[in-house]
Length: 254
Length: 272
Image 1 (cartoon, chains in turn purple, red):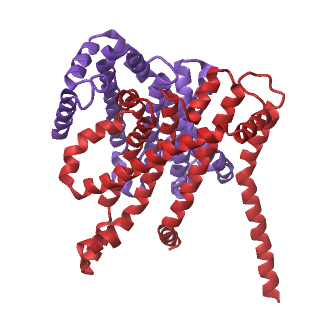
Image 2 (cartoon, rainbow over the protein chains, first blue to last red):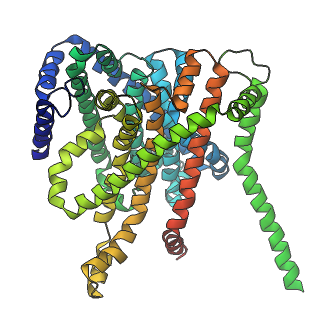
Image 3 (cartoon, rainbow over the protein chains, first blue to last red):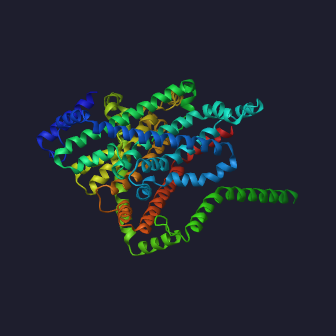
């Protein structure tokens, strides 16, 4: 906590001494008072609500489709081989490059943001799920088959839990990129939400600069909330897997 | 004689299965590409011009120097930004691993900066640095350094304790232990971090050109879109897609060289 206080003090001193002018960086005290004022206004809450809603919809759509396709591809070797090049290619393509196209086709809407989220997060998640399915001990799949367990039940009871270390990592990565794509869609694409409010504040000049910084702080709080939530869910879901996790968990932090 | 023909026969068989395997890998991407060519051939849709038209446009924009000029600018921002991110991430990661107290103290602040979507900081950086290239470089560096930083720190910290005990038993000095045991063991994870940083840096390079910029491929795409020069927009998208692919392939090639020993030992372990 000490460094946070130190950081804020340095910020304040830099602005008071005049190292950075007020039109470059407003003093902490101004930002804090703007933060308090804006938290009392419905605009901010509405914008935050819209951002979170877009984020959740994009994340859920991507997760459901990514997990289903990943499992299907993971279970069949020819299907996986056929899809590998396409998945890896789309994963390497920076999703943000299609933003102008998405704006043309879908306009400055939440749907455009959801499309962006999907286009960015779907490929890495699917690849991660495939890894997870391939890591399953074939014996447990054979056992399920010989016990006559049906497709859906095998999916829910055998495949998903066995592949979960990889799936959970994939979901964490997808969640983080979903948040940044949401804000990008709002800030560059003009979809309603906190990102657009940041840009509007910026375009309203010097008076609104502290407010803009206050909104940036709110965006950071959303990010922290998301990471803590994903970490919490991971612990909740994976508690039984803890012992294996350090071995099974692939190193990929994004 | 018989053994030669047998080995020839088996060679033939592996040759066939390699070919089949290759076909399995490429039929879908090739098919999709052909589908794009055929499906867009007579296209009158304003959003999806024929692929052939896009490629012809790409050729002419490439040879008249429009695209190379923007590309050079984008790549210079990317190079400086990613270089700074990698350097800060590596040095910072080593420093925080070496001084656990500093790590504990800095954690809340680092966590906040990491969790903050990088794009949200962009207007603040524009306010501080103005709209030139330094702002873009700072933006790329600030957004992309986290995977390298955290992976370096985690990689160094999670070295197998058996290896450390072995080093002690062999009377390696502290420096020798770092050099021969800790750093090699952490390297795969550090490289994974560098790779994730590169992917983020490419995205942020584009974003930084979409907001408050007047140069670069990202700017070119957005400008073409707002002028309804849709074919130009598509050429820009293709260039960025190729850029992402090429940089990824280059990284994987370098990675497989640097980490060759690691993959070999892993492959050995699997055969055991």
